[in-house]
Image (cartoon, rainbow, N blue to C red; front, side, top):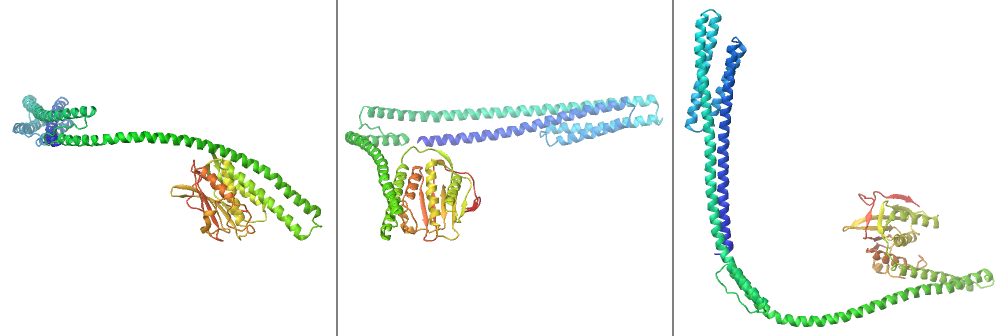
Length: 524
């Protein structure tokens, strides 16, 4: 028989015994509760009988007052009610016989007390002499005392009967419980000894097998005895040792191959360290080169532009129109070249330096940039919708560059739009907070959206909208440094929307039920 089968038998038997014991305890409790209730009722009858006796004495001592007589009859009715109420509680024939006697005595007490009252009334009416009335009263009082004593004695017997019932019930429950516990203990002991022998033998076989494996004997087999769980374990153990023997040899080959691989990885790590060192040096040289080139190029550009403007100012009236156009082209090209140099420096710096973690007020920054743009072109009228309370965590200097580029583009590309509007707000998309800058300007073709964030790539002609194509590339690098993403959507002559996230500690200070709620309309 398997161990789990034996355990199931033991568990089922234990549950059955526990259920029987629970039923026994419930029966005992009910019996004890009934006996306790009977004892309480007997005590209540005794107490009421004593009160009735006191009222009888009060009636005789205080001149046979009407109030004392009425109280005695009320108490008499109460005792009768208690006795009748006790019949369903007391189940034995002896108890019911005692209750019947008590009820009979109680009724006789009422008859005798009425005779006492009638005797007193006959004395008052002078129907009897005082001596004759006193003799009758003494006889009646003695009879009443005897009946009262009998009632109290019977009540005491009821109390004794109820206590005997409680003791008998407790003793019966105790004996049955002890028998059940003894039987359960013996049954568990037998099953436990049987399982213990089976487990002990199985563990001994497993210990021998484990010792053999530790010595390197992968061909050791445990004998299969019986059909229980340990036979299944032995079979699995034997299968395992066979596989161990087969895999041990291949493991040694893998270890050797692993050593060779580790040596190769160590060599690659050394080469990688050397390559990283070279890259760091190259980056430093590239930064120095960019700084040097920017400064070295600025001087000849300034000279070209300055001398060209001087020629126009000093000798412009002597030059032909075509020559003046050439000089203007030189001045324009020099300015464009200076912008390219500034853009390259900004693009280079956006990916270097320490990234600070500040709490940045995006709404405040947007308002400040708006005011600067309006001062540059005060004649323009643009409707601004900037949501209050927008904030994020990041490098304030770099995030300002992002907003300047996005808002500057929105301002530029709405230059030819009637009823121009620029909106700054936030939305949650797939659990991520996105900050958006939207306009209703020139827009762009989504087929060319991939070129937006590439340096020096522009989707509009220079004569339509000026620019060098560095701003969005710089904004993308800054957003990526903050662990976020930036994307754009738009359509030709239908405006554009740029969305970016700043996951490092992003936070929105003001909540809104929809896109329009909480925005401030600040027309330019």
